[in-house]
Amino acid sequence: MKIAVSGKGGVGKTTFSANLSREFANRGYNVYAVDADPDVSLGATLGFAADALASLRPVIEMKDAAKERSGGNGALYNLNPKVDDLIDDFALQHGNIKLLRMGAVKQGGTACYCRENSFLYAVLSNLLLDKDDVVIMDMSAGIEHLTRGTSRGVDMIIIVTEPTRVSVQTAKVVQQLARELGIKNIKILANKIRNAKEQAFIQDQFKSSELLAMVPFAEEVLENSMAEESGLLSGLGVMSGIEQIVDKIIQEVGAGN
Ligand SMILES: Nc1ncnc2c1ncn2[C@@H]1O[C@H](COP(=O)(O)OP(=O)(O)OP(=O)(O)O)[C@@H](O)[C@H]1O
Ligand SMILES: [Mg+2]
Image (tube, rainbow, N blue to C red; front, top):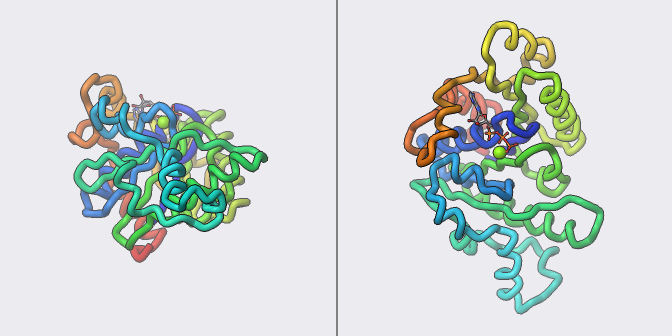
């Protein structure tokens, strides 16, 4: 199963991605937690050690490793290289979570960027090994990483929003783009909801069928991000309702994916 998480800056994408990773891992899934953010915040939020994170090589560098393997053949990008046996060199493992860092994923019309994107897509598509694997991609702020290449094979995109007009506006833009990209399951996760008024605001903006869940604002979640040595894997700052959210995702996507 492949899940992409998107939305405006600061809405809680990384926090939610980390919570999803932890919950799927607790259920025995092999989780690939993919950080598409250059400042490796997903790893830190999960609680990987700073020195280990600092030395984690980005997946984009795998291109060179794969190239060496093919004897430096530049045509490699088109061949959907087999990379799953290379993955472990580019992952930090904690229990059944493997953390990957994408490195610079750029969008643009140049051949160079397209190649990088298509390579990264090849890596992602090769990650999916069996039905107990789940890939969770923290797509970072905004929609710049959402390209045709990376969206192919995504089973669900979850767009996180706060109860504010600006983040709802961004969510709707991402939602529309996701539709154009043909992503089957497009869901909104309303985060940091504090009261009935904010709940009503979200219900006014989205149909109930579009809403995955509403997550309350929680001091413990915020405090966990302020603590120096913390991390979700230690069980601190878990978002309330994450079990039901994962139940719903599995139900929507289908257990066999
Ligand atoms: N439900 C919540 N209740 C309280 N605080 C929350 C909640 N969800 C996230 N936060 C806090 O909001 C802040 C931003 O969260 P996070 O870093 O996950 O957002 P992001 O969308 O990944 O941001 P960026 O766009 O910078 O990557 C963090 O301090 C986090 O602890
Ligand atoms: Mg983030």
